[in-house]
Amino acid sequence: MFPYPLLTIALLVMWLLLNDFTLGHLLLGSIVAVFASWGMAALRPDKPKLRKWYLLPKLFAIVMVDVIRSNLAVSWVILRGRTRGHHASFINLPLDIDDPTALAVFAVIITSTPGSAWLEYDSRRRSVLIHVLDLIDEDEWRDQLKNRYEKLLLEIFS
Amino acid sequence: MIYSAADVPVWAAAAIAFFLLFGALLALIGAIGFLRLPTFYERIHAPTLSTSWGTGGIMTASILFFSIAGGRLVAHEILIGIFITVTTPVTFMLLARAALHRDRVENHPDVPTRAELVVSTIQDRASDEKGA
Image (cartoon, rainbow over all chains, first blue to last red; front, side, top):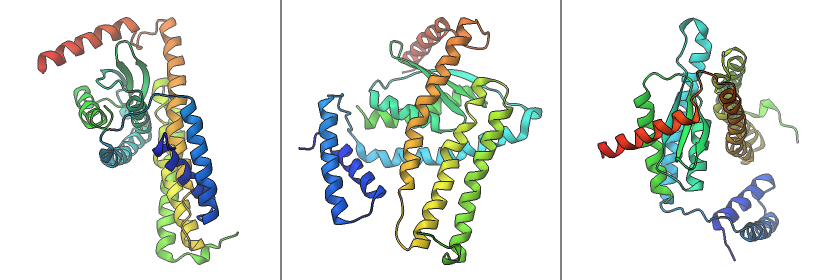
């Protein structure tokens, strides 16, 4: 009945947000969500394994704080202009995660944090090329990406 | 339905104005950075200001205003935030990989080549194993 429970719930919530919270829309939205997740099941994608889903809010909170911090940092780099300068650089980071969903979440985190951009992932070497706008200490960046995000992602998806 | 700003109490109006201006300011700074930063790889960082808290701030202001003025929770703006966050990396990776490809074909000195990346990955893995 529910091959992808999370997807079904997400679709229902989206339906209710876009329309009104009424009984009629609850029923209609449920029907749409169930049929859409059957459609998804017919495509037979790899099922993401969420092992420790209760760590997701923790990851979300950490990312929110980091996004605010890096927003301010990047604004400062742009506003102070060319006189003081900054040190843009590439970082090549070997990864331990190889689950496609975990990689997608990691890419979203790195891209939505201003100041770092996910450029290309190579599945054969299992490493990603990241560009950093203002690189002050490369080891600190590596340590932050590895220990702050990747460890949590490894725990959540495995 | 048309809402009037007079329906909103002062404390809420202050919060709404703060989030709206904060988001708009970040979007403006992002646009300035997009114009002024010198290289392609630096320029792709600037629009992420608009796609993260630029959108976030304006979204929060919109949710607050319509929820308070309308007297019921209006939250479909969250969907805008979710879809922007999930779709920007796709565009970014396409642009960045196209730029990397072109720079490698032209032998641009600042861009790491594939061979360099292979060597550096092997070295990193080796030093990780030594450390562990």
